[in-house]
Image (cartoon, rainbow, N blue to C red):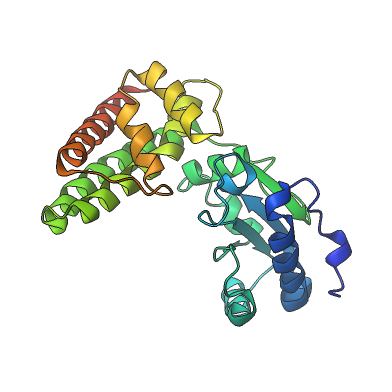
Length: 251
């Protein structure tokens, strides 16, 4: 039994993910030893959006120093973790988190909103963000999304499955941006994807239907014909374009 396994608190997690997280965390504490400061579970695995057998369990590890060495050590665990629903963890230091509040504010806002620290001190609870930084990253990400949609469509060369992947990726990447835009407008931020889309559609005046559908395509096997795919592409492109204009005008 790993030395720190009794300090791993999985009881606050959804029951369906407790055992794989317990196994992974026990192995981490054994492998990283004193360099490991905290383990935090983040993302959809903490919510009703989690689909067992299809969704990943995402984690953030805070280490005291030598993050590359920690990554190498975790890579050595690959064989024992093969077949488990645990995604490759994000590895950070406290200094990295603190000094990234201006450039990765959307990601850190999302981590702060929905996380459970199961080992060590919570690295996200006390973070403070500037609206100027959040607005600027929203604008940059939305305009970059328009570029990716155009390039992805060209690269897909009309192949429905490939276009579907491009559209689904664009839809999925919008969720943290919508939460950040709601934060900028001082609105509550829902955690569940459908609730985020519905809330943001009301606040920022866009049609949520295709965005809802495209987010489901990532986990559900749905047959999509060319006509529906073209409709989804146009709708999501229009949504991203309109959101980019909205955020460009925010204070």
